[in-house]
Image 1 (cartoon, rainbow, N blue to C red):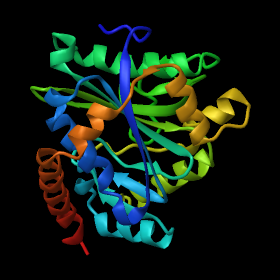
Image 2 (cartoon, rainbow, N blue to C red):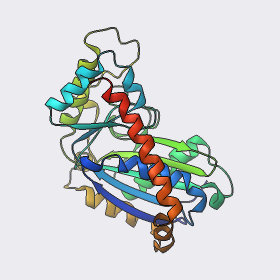
Image 3 (cartoon, rainbow, N blue to C red):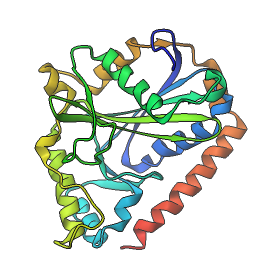
Image 4 (cartoon, rainbow, N blue to C red):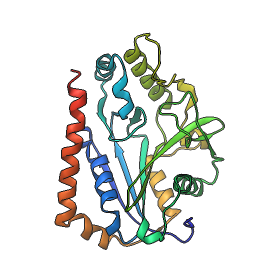
Length: 274
């Protein structure tokens, strides 16, 4: 398994707004498809304002339109990502981070657990005062076996996607802001979508107190920019020249366009509910 102390990363950051919210996963998908051309592992930091990111499973809500109407009423944008899982919130206090590991650089494939552990190791190194635990926080939103928590309260969730070229490990980290309010929003989203029907789909019973932020856990002021800086400091960052060349290449731009078409088609599943 790669040693964080000896890894060297290229990196880039996107601060997105709702009008270009699909860019987050368009770039994620395109970079994973292009992982065979990466010269180093890659860190992709991104933020997105006032948005609920839905998972594919959320389509099964029996009253999905009522749930989407609630998001509209609360002033939230939304879109569906092309991966499993469930709804998460993205706003000015949430940092999204992806690590791309190309197989050709490692010489072997990481197991699923090894890939997840790389992200856990990075966050623990960046925030040594946090005593992180890994395991599902049942009453959080988007619960999963690689939730990261502090004293039983979730601060982030991890997922991954892989192909023949490499793996991308994706984290959303609640850095600061009103996590209680985020929990209320997702609790109410599922309540509106279920309308008291039997929850045979196992949508989460969200307790807003099940989650907290890094800022609260550390009892110190912290911004998303601070968090990015601490994570970058925990790594050895490289010049991005070869990454820039890849991302401006005709092949990569063509891949981005294909992913844009695919993501737009996915959103049609939500529009049909309107």
